[in-house]
View 1: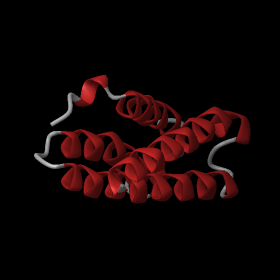
View 2: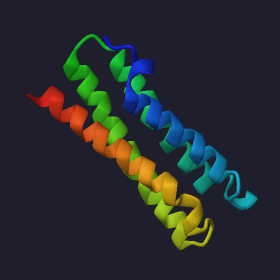
View 3: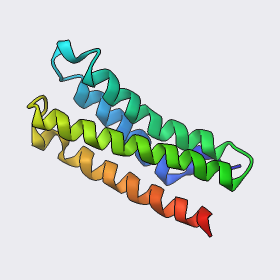
Length: 117
């Protein structure tokens, strides 16, 4: 069992989730039950699954939840790119968020590989 709050990946994923909430609050109100809801669920899922996996009893279980977090990060990346393509958000508004999200993905991949040995 790991203390998830000490994990750098969890801390960075929390930053991504927080920034996602702030950015999505600028979306048009008609997206409240569309992209806003979906984006926020994906963003929250990343640190949530890292935390849940860290609380499990085995590294294999942790690895499984990291895999779910990986899927959620790809989902969020897709939704952010789509939001930009639909002109819901300007590129300069999401550049840092995308960079941070990709960093979380790399950290997650590295951690998964650690448990694969």
